[in-house]
Image (tube, rainbow, N blue to C red; front, side, top):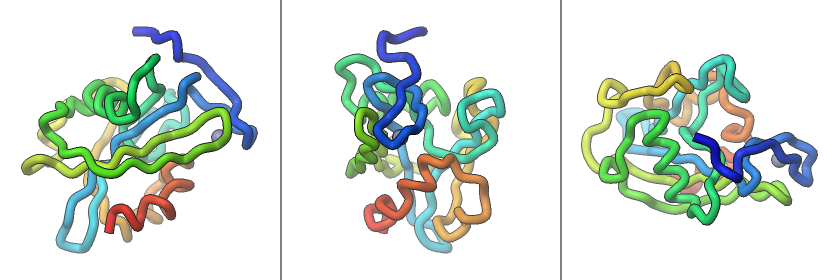
Length: 154
Ligand SMILES: [Zn+2]
């Protein structure tokens, strides 16, 4: 389903981004045996930055809040329902003319990859210890935001 905010734009830093009103993603985190874990999805190869692990998310719709957009995208891509999560802080990565808001959340109950229903944009999902992240190919947006996100995950 297309939205009037679908489309490519170029930010002040010279990147191409999808989403004329910016984008948002949901970063689920939990306390794991080896420290903080985050839930990441593997994007299908044909998608923008395909083959990398990142947060479920995408372009915001008109007049949509970052939290609503992140929850909508997580619902479409992973089958997560709003009641499955407890929303937390938001972190905005503002590139000038385009921004990405990461919405932090914790699972409302036990949440394992097998509980999720992935759509065609996602080919994998899993919990990763923060300390393992350098070993997986990360979406460049998430990689760039991690230093700002880490204190919020502690
Ligand atoms: Zn940018």
